[in-house]
Each structure stands twice: as structure tokens, then as C-alpha cells.
Image (tube, rainbow, N blue to C red):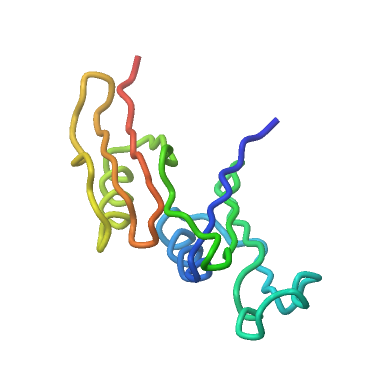
Amino acid sequence: MRVNPHLEFDGRCEAAFTFYEKTLGGKIVFMMRHEDSLLAKPMPPDWGNKIVHAMLVLDEDRLIGAEVAPEQYQKPRGFSILLNLSTLAEADRIFTTLADTGTVEVALQETFWALRFGALTDQFGTPWSINCGKQA
């Protein structure tokens, strides 16, 4: 069994996934627009270019996303996507890039359990936790 986060966006799914691909070093392997899907008919005419399904592969993990209708969109809350990173340089780079034009909730810092830990919400409204653990 695998757990794959599915993110919902308010019209910026393609921009978010392009940003995540560059920032996290993954690869977008699938991106379908509403106009190319079976869902095109019931959607408003200006909705065709919106993303109905996107998939970003990060090693063995997958990040999934889609646009949702404005009346259905809700800001993410009650969770964060935790990235466990193996080097300080990687933790610093990814945190700094995700935090750019976002909101830092916990500055990236050493803790009793990690060489670095920090929490933020990126420019697309996605909450992230960055962790670079201490060696046992």
C-alpha cells in the first residue's frame, strides 16, 4: 500500500506542479486538462484548460493534484506534507524555495529530534514540513 497526497488547487495546479517538479527534483508524468477528459461536458466553458489530474513522481512517492471548482475549493488545513531529507543543504534549499512568497510558520532550525525542522505554507497554499533527521 502507498499513501499519495492529493492536493486540490484554486486554479493554479499547473503552476504549482511545475514549481514542485523544479523544486523537489521530481518529474511530472501525467497532466490532463478538463477539455481532454470525460468531465469536459458538465464543466463551465472557461474550465477546459484547467487540470483534472496531475501526477508528480518523487522517487517511489507520488504527489497528485487537480483543480476544483471555485465554489468547492477550501484552503488546506489540518495536515502538512512532510519531506524527510537526508542532507542539510537539501533541507535548506527546499525550505527556502518553498517559503519564497509563502508563509513560514516554524523557521528552519535544529531541534532535539532533527538537524533541521521547519514548517511553511507555500505560495499555492500547500502546507509543508521539512525535516532533516539526526543520525541514530
